[in-house]
Image 1 (cartoon, rainbow, N blue to C red):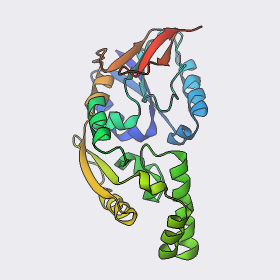
Image 2 (image 1 turned 90 degrees about the vertical axis):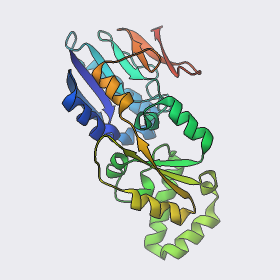
Image 3 (image 1 turned 180 degrees about the vertical axis):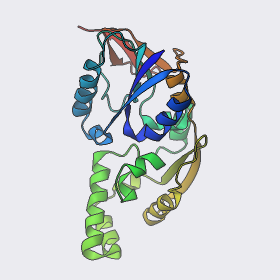
Image 4 (image 1 turned 135 degrees about the vertical axis):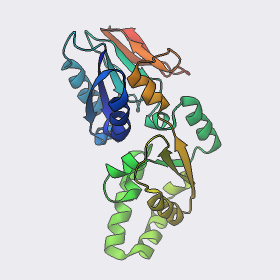
Length: 248
């Protein structure tokens, strides 16, 4: 079977690794992670790529995305079924299941998530490359780096403390290490960030199972949504996360 995967670039290492051994022929397109900063922009880019899919070429178009702040809501492919994981965001894809992500969130909702791929594609400053961080926190990290350059680290730390209490919402830096493939180890950088911010550091094992089953065609309805041609993705606001409906 021929498949097409349209995926966020932060999953590049994982999806190329899986595709290399998959029983299907998979064409992969990566999308700039920076588009997550604006859901409308990301949605428009994803729809543009779906519109460009050749009719009758693929058995399915796979989406390497979670709901991602409703960025995938409204997407449709007129002639080919779409398949996507039932996930709120890519952290679920790194951890391997929604249940595990939910358990970690209940255990500690104030977590900054880090992965090797995201850090590699996020620039030199590791503070800026955490998963699940809102634009506000990213902007604050940029401000911090500017203050360090202008005033030194001690003064920058003081100024950030005076400016606001954005850090109080977070108390853990979690570094996800994919067990099935050997990737560069960026955990020391994350430990440094955690120490400077007064957070605990935790390293945990990731899993490729959700991505592997997506690319290898094991699409059970519990973990994946299959969207028939011409239908669109919609949020369900329940444990299913996403659903499909006819275009209005």
